[in-house]
Length: 341
Image (cartoon, rainbow, N blue to C red; front, side, top):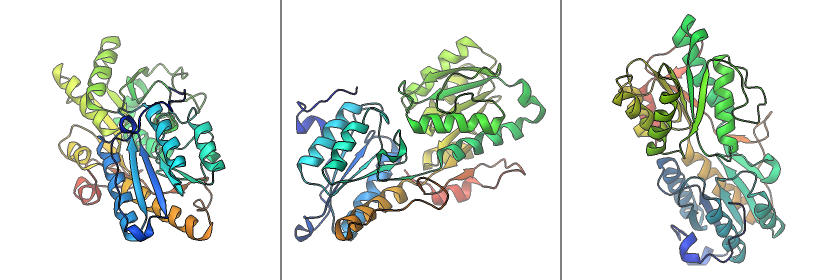
């Protein structure tokens, strides 16, 4: 996944290209590189970037991997952006470690590199990160699950439906945050799967989609059919997990929690398929990223992080119709007013 793919054709790597600026402003250009172009989260991110680029007179080209985890297409897109003379790159990296040398090459060429949603490893491999506090997002749903179960939490059987084998930072942060909120010692906070709490049934990979969520849930139910708490990397994976549980008659006695806040996911919370989700705001991330590239192109100034953090925090809110006293949350009616996708 990490090897160079410069031999790939432009047509193979560019799954979508948007030119959103008037001709006279074509000297300020930017690239958006997302993990996929099908996940509603990244669709909304592209919408936010496109609208802000049009508003500011920035020429935007957008690229995406074929599936979540397709780092090779992202590497090829970076090379194209450098060759095209872009002023900056916005990226949600599939391989947060492996892609760093390629992004260093972009920065060395004078491009502003901004990570969206998913921090690079190390985080300062980007000039700035615009993201949800993913550790907090995980903590919120972990604490909600713990408080909802009450005394039963000490005997819970927890399944983790993760993203990809490469353990990108967003996956680690949400996963470890959930454990902290639920009261599970995550051991090494930079690694998934090394915890020894007997409540953890296991981890499986979903690739962030519904089919993957269904398969991962089926696998973990074979390992332990008494699972009663499920942490999912995102809401498409949660939807798949719910279908797998429904197929064996367990959908009403298992708590599923997730992170995203997309409209389909919030509707699943309202319908009871998901107990609670942490809502994030991808349109704002992308719009802020385009603003930062335009400002950098005009003045050379780089964006600054939120005070007390090493990234710019774009916010997170717990959405549930079954609130617990210890956590501030909004209900699904309000969540639907703020959702995306």
